[in-house]
Amino acid sequence: MRSGQNNLGRVLVVDDQPANLRVVSALLSRHGYEVITADSGEEALALASEQAPDLMLLDMIMPGMDGFALLEQIKQRPELLRLPVVFLTAAHDRELLLRAFDAGAVDYVTKPFMPEELLARVNAHVGLKQTRDRLERVARERQELVNLVAHDLKNPLTSVLFASDILVSNGTRPE
Image (cartoon, rainbow, N blue to C red):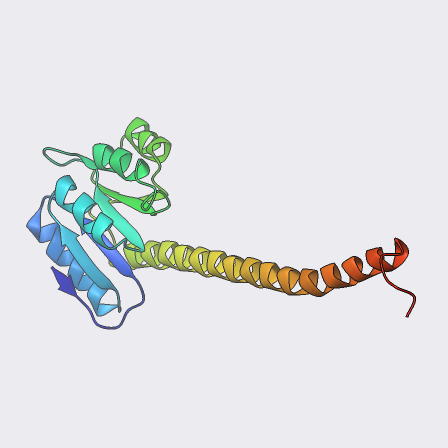
């Protein structure tokens, strides 16, 4: 399901509860995000692989592939390796939350959540990812420019060096 036309970023929301998907989707869509939803880990993996989102909001406890198993699958795919994942969870168990960070989550929000808190965390993590993507793009473009300039400078210098070697080695006729 896709919604939202103003595109502050693309968020994939994964939860096995349809009511949670509706609430989170409506909130994020109203605030300008493109929202993609999945009700299982398998569907989320397929959607994320098809077109990588800027952020994944992931339910920790789901039947079949739970949030931890999905996160493990994500971390094994190079195209999704840097996808920020925020767990949405009813769990308040410290060990479970620490396990989430160890698995690679960047943050978590406990259910029931305050809309302002969820929006603030989504804004922060989407903003960080988009800034990182821009910086990586600028660095790539800069490296391409450096390579181009180095190539263009190297060619005339090679000709000058070649001519000077010929002159030094008396490889030319006096005239």
